[in-house]
Length: 201
Ligand code: GLN
Image (cartoon, rainbow, N blue to C red; front, side):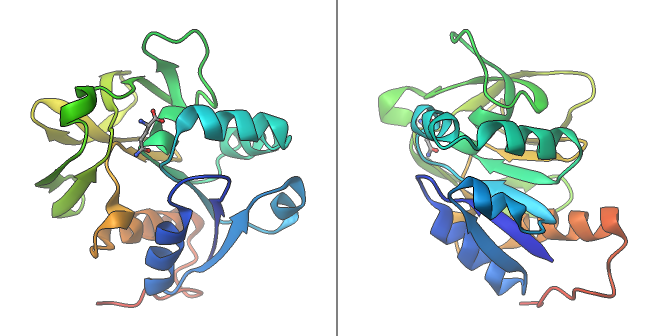
């Protein structure tokens, strides 16, 4: 099990640590050559979506990553990562990867309220801690999208096919259950359960 973590900007180190606690191999994606490595899954971290989007183009990573995601590579985007994966960003003309049929609102809670902590249910996992930082939320979701969590009547986690997104940062808590959920889903899809045993803790 080898998961690539986009490491252009933002909180990629924390994702790598969480994946490591589960016993997954990780590598950082910074340039095109990194994409030549075998990859079972991809994480797009939080940070600043406009900056990461610009770097994806400047470093010529966008097309190759989009091809991989479109052809079914399991991908998990948190916060800015969710924004980059959305079909539409409210108030903006263009989206980035358009990999999941959701409309997201950036900095959606306003400057003061955008950063907060909550504990809420996520379908398939249970009660988890959620750290929101200048957070977006999902304004609307297409019929094919499974809504996984709602906090204060806002959708904050969802999935469609190979794409999982959260408006919050599970990597910034000590709870690795969302990463486990992502990794176990990859194993399920690949039928690779003999090659990888998540470390239980
Ligand atoms: N506000 C950021 C954006 O719009 C996202 C914040 C985050 O990733 N913590 O890209």
